[in-house]
Amino acid sequence: MLGQILREAWISITAYKMRTFLTMLGIMIGVAAVVLMVAAGQTVQNEITKTFDSMGTNLIIIGPGETVSGGVRGGRGRPSVSFDDVESLRELKDVETSSYIVNTAVQAVYGSNNYGVSVAGTTPEYLNIGNWEIDQGIMFTDRDLRSGKPYAVIGQTIVNELFGLQDPIGKTLRLKGKPFTVIGTLKEKGDGLMGDDQDNIILMPATTLRQRLKGSNRPQYSDIAFVKVTEENKMESVANRIEYQLRARHRLKDGVQNDFTVRLMTDMVEKVRSVGFYLSLLLAAIASISLVVGSIGIMNMMLVSVTERTREIGTRKALGAPNRWIMFQFLAESILISFIGSFVGMIIGVVLSQIGGQILDKEVPISVWSVVISISVAVVVGVVSGLMPAIKAMKLDPIEALRYQ
Image (cartoon, rainbow, N blue to C red; front, side):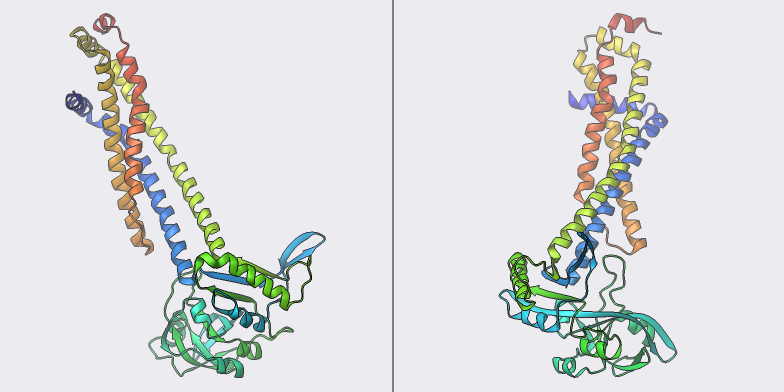
């Protein structure tokens, strides 16, 4: 029975090829748009995951406390976590290592080339904290940190912009007119979460940066500090230990607000991912509006088909065709149109998403959700848009149908 219904449905929809194609077009466009939006959302999620993986998700970030004026929270306060504070955190249980950075932005000059760069004064442990790897040369040492050596470890963007094909190791670049010797280069990381160039960076001893590039009335304090935890599931307990340790070192009494902030990278990751998820969901919902338009088109075509085939329906009923057979016939036509349109739309969406990925140089996943969406849309839209015409056909009086001109 099912095979015969499908064969008759195929004969009916191919009898008017252009009308059937135009009806399918709405579903094709709708499904393609939804598939594209789902692919875009998954690509964003993957890029977020890739960026945080390059930074490390088992990090705890410690910054200055928030300012409060008249009961209103303001921005970040003055630096409050000292270099010694950060070093003391390495002794806590479940802490792998800790580090800190002091930031500034300057113009880097080598020969006739110059380039705006971000400089991070830090410690040797920052390589482990930030998941950086040395490409050539070496990293500066704790001894270099204590003595404030004018050493620089540079990212690949700076290598390309300032040195080109030259080997930068041992060369001297100038920052604010002061010489710094390049002792190492970092392996490429690519763009960050906000599209920033992670490779446009110079690492140097924090003491060197304070002495030569960025003075401060609190020279022994960090802009931001990091603690790397041995296991991600121990983040909460380590964060509590950090808070207790820093409050004790800062001699904060009970009831006094922290003069520092402690944030878990896992919390930040989840927040950013949730924003990406809801954004992609919103885009998919907007794109699905075209599916509604497509389903209306199918319903309109099927209603016209019922009217055009009134005598045919009357003849079938007069020859003994049951009502459910008539209803299934029109439902099958509606579902078949929707299924073909959904399948073609899925193919178009996948192909366009891959082309877009090639153009933007991004890896776009081919998701199983594309198949799920296509099949679901085909069934739901086919049934919903074909139900009213099918019921109308089923209820036709065979005598009146045979009289219809």
